[in-house]
Figure (cartoon, helix red, strand yellow):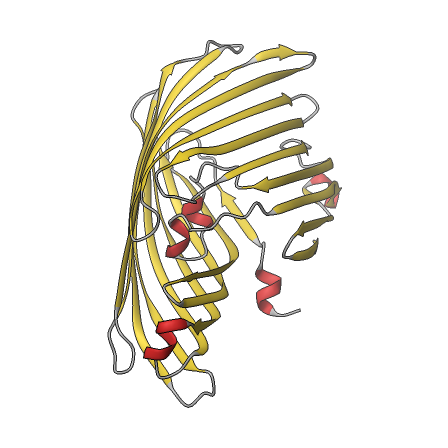
Length: 359
């Protein structure tokens, strides 16, 4: 097992709750990996990127602020076809990149109904392009800048004990990547933007020992820049059931990009999950089972899970990938009950292969 394979899927989160009079601190980290492939204007690319995040934040009162550091390493191949191959000195080769980024972020709870957040960042790195036979090698500086902001406002607040709730969410994203011009390699610059406005409705019902919560969201979005551009409409629906006493949670979610001006651009996804949470003590059985098809999330988490800046913009081709993630563990009291140890195992099945986790 290589160090990269060991880190994939790893994460941690360490937090102090605070006593209500002072700040609460948290540190967190995670490693994400992703693959890419595409072809446009006679250029074919494929490869993978691994990114490690390390962050820390502090919360006090209505504020939370922190900074994350990210290090990305990518490696892939490229090939030129048609006119692009005729105009180039070589037709295929390898491409590698490294990028180190700093990403400060903040969240402000304006009142009991309105929350706003913002994130900015900049990164610097190196891009290396090698000819197929290794005789030509070009290196150039790489840079990335991004900014994002959003907010959520509750229009109708659900009463205590459950009821109808209506909220309005919005977010805006801008990202730019550039590479310098060096002898034998032209410079490049690419921008991407996204604006969204989403109406989110939910209603909680008492059902048996738990609570059933159906939800529906309808959103407008506009994509701009050097990727797919134009306006679109997103529709999402969800159904969840939770029983706090037993720790059992069931959830199902579907999302569909109902319309978009960019011809041939589509997104949709369906996902579900079953979870058993042993509670704050961590003692007893824990279980997670989560199948999914396509892209069932609305994109907020993309800021942290994208392999690189290009992943923040929509791609030209959508494929409904299938995925099944499962994990089971059992919390045991150790050293007189002062500690909890949880042996656990997990299985991830996807079209990209199989991953087994033990810990």
